[in-house]
Amino acid sequence: MIGVFDYTVLLTYLSLISATIGIFVSLQQSGHPYIGVFFLLFCGLCDAFDGRVARTKKNRTAFEKKYGVQIDSLSDLVAFGVLPACIGNAMIRVCPTISEVPKLYSGNRLTFPTVIFLYAIMVFYTLAALIRLAYFNVMEEERQKTEQTALTAYTGLPVTSAALIFPSILLFQYVIPEDITLVYFGVMFLTTLLFISKLPVKKPGLRGIFVMIAIGFAEFIALGITLYRR
Figure 1: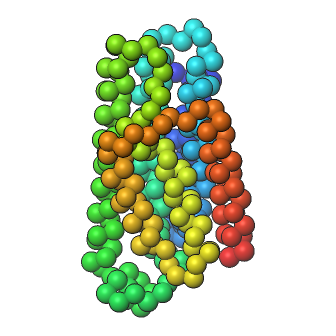
Figure 2 (figure 1 turned 30 degrees about the horizontal axis):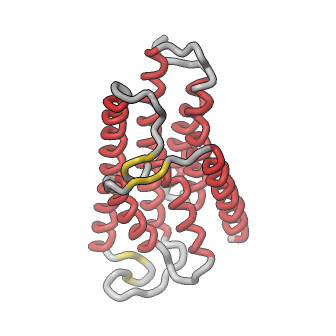
Figure 3 (figure 1 turned 90 degrees about the horizontal axis):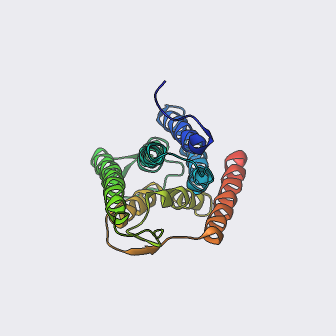
């Protein structure tokens, strides 16, 4: 059997499984974006520890290390590139709370030109995530040929930040009465640009990771409460 199936890749596999289920749920006619986002949060939790778990195995072969890098990027593309776009598709379909906006809404539905524009943002977002992941893999491989130290900063916004950004946006739906579908896509467009920007972003340490996990857990609880009340 091809592949690696020990504990070092378990979290990466779980992240992909979660992302796949989230995509299926978001694309279902009865699916709701607030359900899909729970799977996005779980993907973020898995990603926070997959690298650290993998490094606990001291006798990993060069093949296992390279395999781990490849599946991590492939999983990230699905979890943080495709899944947020599918959640956006569910936002378009559901339009949780509609307020009339001239030329953008027709009754309680987004107009066709608006929908086409939003789909273009989703495609651009997924493409930018792909470009960033591929670029980062190549640059990191080249960097390791001359440097032995661990990476301390990223160039551009990591795609994994999607696990915190989009759940935060969805929480605003139950804070303000207006529909936030267009806000979601506005943030998605900005995130897209940050993915492929040259903005320096400091790599979080263990404390930073636990802070982000705490934020994600708080988002999980808040989204669960608001969805239950609906």
